Image 1 (tube, rainbow, N blue to C red):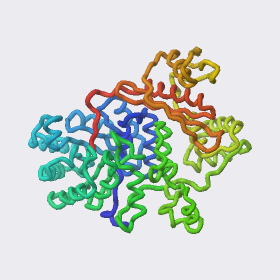
Image 2: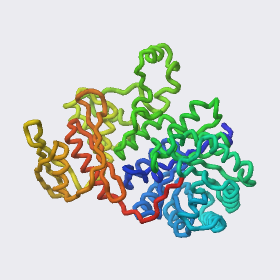
Image 3: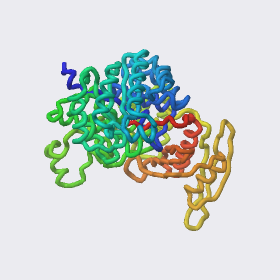
Image 4: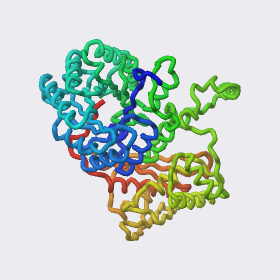
Length: 516
């Protein structure tokens, strides 16, 4: 059995810090679906949300806590008694609950944000951990903006909260300011100057404002930290968080350097990444390490020649290691229901008979249009037909007239709360005509922030996936639609964004947190 001192705990905050970033909002069902995938991935701690933020956030955290059985479930809270009580109410039924409380410790935050003195913050931090310990022995404390905090004062805070019973202490680089070497030095300084530091797990949480979040996290591990707070695909506030897949695979691929290990099932990494993009509609860039479309692509002839002779010449890890299968079975219109069912199991989807029938029906419809059906096509069908719950708005019919000798016109028929409505309107182009018509039908007029189109697979018959982002107050809401007709996919994406806005809970003012 491996020594526990070399074990790194993976704390995933995709559903909290990641979900706060523009375009990544999820509803309760989507959060639960992703939490279950994180459990399959082998994440040690799932930070499910910020329960005090809204009734919707509270409900999502509570539901995740009730259904996740293997991973710890953490609820974030400020140091106020009300926040801590609310967090506990949300996670108390978890198999392994964790209260995660935080307060700023840097002078710049104390002066301009909290309007508090150092002694006041120290007293509040102690009281918060003490109160949280009354509910559970699993308490984490975060010193917000730790990397810009006076080092002696930070030592005082860390020692105090451990003295009060904190079992994990997080040292966040909240604004992504630290360089890897200086962050490593900070963690080493804490180990040298906090008398009781061995009584807690030291955690790191880095933001990617300067593009070094993963390097900073690894430097913290090298200096003695044993928990990394990260997100799938590196999503999060501003430039995002340290990427879970990059941290894990750096440790896995370079064991000779780090000598550390995690409990992550690396073969679930790619599926986790794809599921997040399916839910949010936000794709990762092609050159993204580990999970990007080009991560294992080799264009240069000399690279291809080397790979043919020996894979390790230009590949430091295999695609299969992270769940990218070389055997992407091509299905066609002659494939039967049994073949589809078995392939769904291989892809990690445990569907009941009715759901398999739904997928099979859509598969047959698509197979009449496309010669070959790939895994990505199947995943798009599942995302749209299985996991998308009944919505307020539903597209029934679309017809578009366009061209260089015609005024772009869209005729749209929709079902709204069971009632069928149809209208036709003009636009400056076919997509604009579709969106204008949908706006007229629904009466929902949100600013279009982004419109993206990409093909799921190669070829002119590939399904098109459209991502639409709408501005709803201070939030950016993403919608996603897929179809072999990109105009139909555009309508589906716009309507999906409207449905996501309809299901969005109202968040309490002033409760959003950007802790490192």
